[in-house]
Image 1 (cartoon, rainbow, N blue to C red):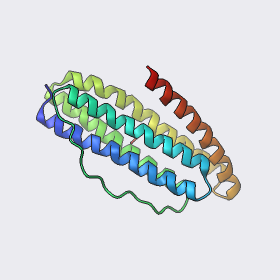
Image 2: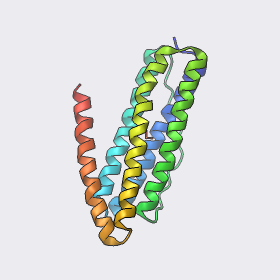
Image 3: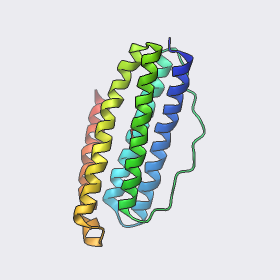
Image 4: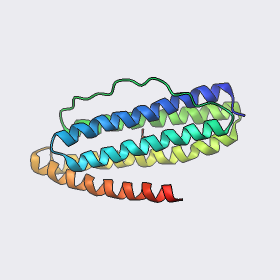
Amino acid sequence: MISKKLETAINEQIKLEEQSARVYMAMASWCEANGLPGAAKFLYTHSDEERLHMLKFIHFLNDRGGYSALQALEMPKTDFSTLADIFKSILHHEEYVTKKINELVDLCLTEKDHTTNSFLQWFVTEQIEEESTVREISDKIKLLGEAHGGYFHVDMYLAGLAATAAASMAAAKKV
Ligand code: OFO
């Protein structure tokens, strides 16, 4: 049985993962409407991944005798200026998510909940990849420049990343 403190904290994390899915969907929509189909595909796929993160937490909490109660979400930002700005704010967002996952692990340790701690280790590892992928994309944007030619190549690169991410999500669903 999970403690009330952890149940409340995990429900907050469920909200954050669902909010992340909306944040990325809003960015994807902007890219789609602004001639960046590869970036849009990458961000729509990323939004789907966030929904899977949310579901992992929902199932875990319900399985441990808690209750995953969904909460109201905030309005996501919908006006963006450049792809570089989008990826800058994604990095800030993911650093915040990493902080929240680490706080959950801290809470597990004080509550002596080793089962939840073990479950959270998947997210600890996932956040390393989340942050490093975004840093890599931001570096590519800097390298290729923000002019149209640069964005064209970054967009192609993101289309490739989206295809790989979609394939690994499909494989994970089959397991
Ligand atoms: Fe769920 O990791 Fe991103 O936000």
